[in-house]
Length: 236
Image 1 (cartoon, rainbow, N blue to C red):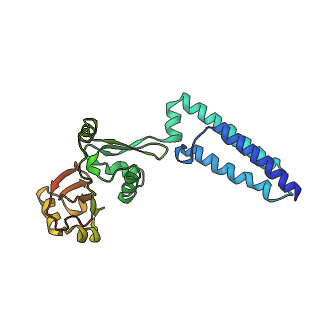
Image 2 (tube, rainbow, N blue to C red):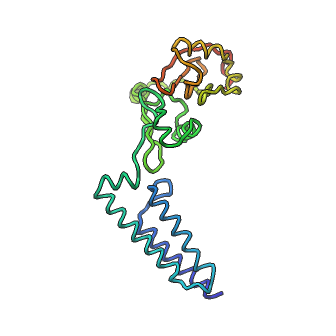
Image 3 (cartoon, rainbow, N blue to C red):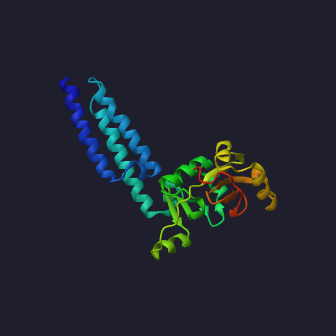
């Protein structure tokens, strides 16, 4: 029992030292290779602690090896852009001036619900307020507001009424619950699509606000806003 106790303390101190050596990063800020190394360290550290008959160096040697690997890879990535891109990938724009970037979402293996959740987590509920949204290599979402919203805030004008968009179409399919909640008829959406020579399957995302202003993001065409008729009023 004392051996397990002593090995646990030593392993903790070693892992603590190694993690501090790797840098002060939270899990959500790590690059992919850093996260992999951290997970492996956590796994191998448990091997000698759980079994008193396994020598302590069975866990310490892999830990120091992985720490050294991390330091070497970090150094090389600082010196070489190509290596940095190979290890960490590239930042991808998922929302630009044309709307949702469907191709980049496919590269990231993301669906629209993933994007909606990420945007909301970043503090935004309205896609039409966003000029650019960029997924960094560590998975964090960077959002840049449109100049109109930034200008209103800087001038100190009274804040406008907050409008919460309701998703009406996601990945070319109606969201039936939100159609009923907002009082939006499918014929009204089809009218807008016909006017813009689009099909329902072409729409990656569409929503509507309480004032009847709708936002449409086709897969391969620029996004656009237009008014539609709703009967839901302020039900949401």
